[in-house]
Image 1: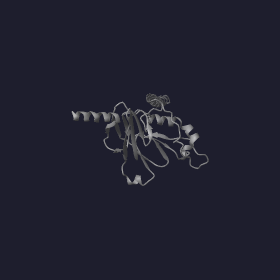
Image 2: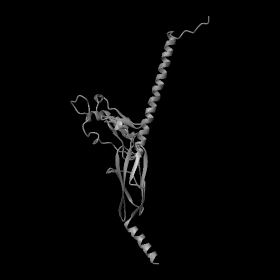
Image 3: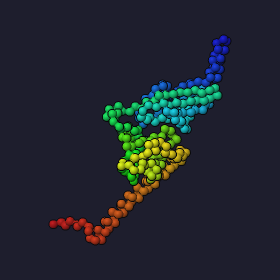
Image 4: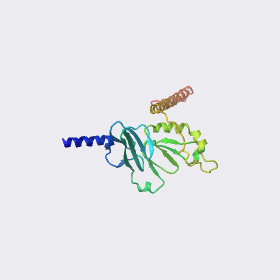
Length: 250
């Protein structure tokens, strides 16, 4: 009877104080290869908690009991706070990006950027008239004349960010380039403070899908135009008698 009472008291104490039942990964230090996704999650008692996630102190939107993290270069701190009726519990992971230990890269001004990042030129003569921007399909090294962007939350799609920058290229050049310089470059901190419109995730997906569908249609039309131009040239050659002579057997 005494043991039962003690057990009940312990359970009641846990209920009042709250606790982390488990976390995944179940370690404080996590090493992940660049570009690889990993799910971080917690189980809390009581379970009806409100979860607040941050990556390097920056709040993460739309994350509940779990968060899917895409490994970036460098070291990062991922934290989740579970607030419930009895208080707040906190879990922290130290994340280490496992980039290839290539001496040539580490000893230079080059940076290894993971696939899915958006990169753009920030210092070059081409910025007189063009703002080059691209979406990486694989890990790639860049130098100090380029800058990379990668959303830290699933609330923003990399392709959406890419198209926003691409469609605003003229405005970006007009507002961001330093005047009176030999080699064009952007003001310091220009992209750090540059506003990006955040739309609902479904809206971003619809915009990207619509743009890519239009691009596919344009590409198909270009191919069709090239085919008809070739047919026209063939017809004109036949009209003017410029067709190849038929070989005559001797």
